[in-house]
Image 1 (spheres, rainbow, N blue to C red):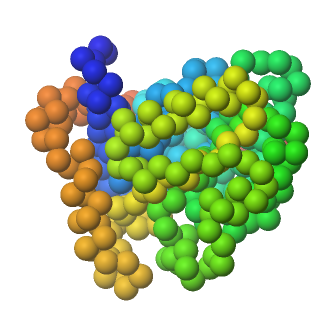
Image 2 (tube, one colour):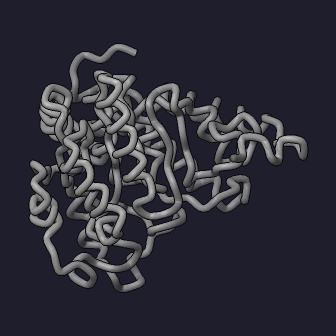
Length: 309
């Protein structure tokens, strides 16, 4: 599909992700989806802005909240829904579910249910790219809660020590499950990262895919040219609960006012004309993908131990 400008292309991609996850919300009570889901509703602009800046040969490693990155990097939508359904035609053959999406054919190298566990994998891929002299940038995408983990600090230290082409991308939605930053971190995320000697960038407009793209594309260019690591913190906000399809504003740890403040700047809420323009085509694609998942076969008993190391 061709687009008249960058804004329209990124809005289309973000809208496609949001409508996909809204379909998940509709389907979830039916029990057809065979795994817990960590939705990216509200955070789509980060993934589309970042992935727009990358080549198909660049790698992204992400967390269990991976739907947006899978789709933004070019993962197949039919395989996406088939994986959620636990079907053999899913991107992980129905064995991974929502928290373990992967599409290595487009550079989405995998997600993990274990907090921060894909960060060292990204660093390892960056080390390989450097030693093999590949023209490749590696992105490790994670939430602010991952910076609490020891392996995050070890990975950051190792990447700076050995000067690798890796970008540490922190999607800061201010929450680790139900805990706010101030309740668990005595440090400032960027300030602490800089203590390792890595260059850092802060992007406040995590609701704006174009702003994310312009900032991130410059960073990608620098990392590709200099073969050195970089740390990026992007402010964002998740609209739904930590895990599951529901809202959780009645639980007391955050307010609906915060949600409305983010929505007041969200192009997917504000730009109704472009939404209406692309809505029919996206819904047709989603309907087709869901139907594909519905009729796809279940994994057989013989496949139980295949792809297991």
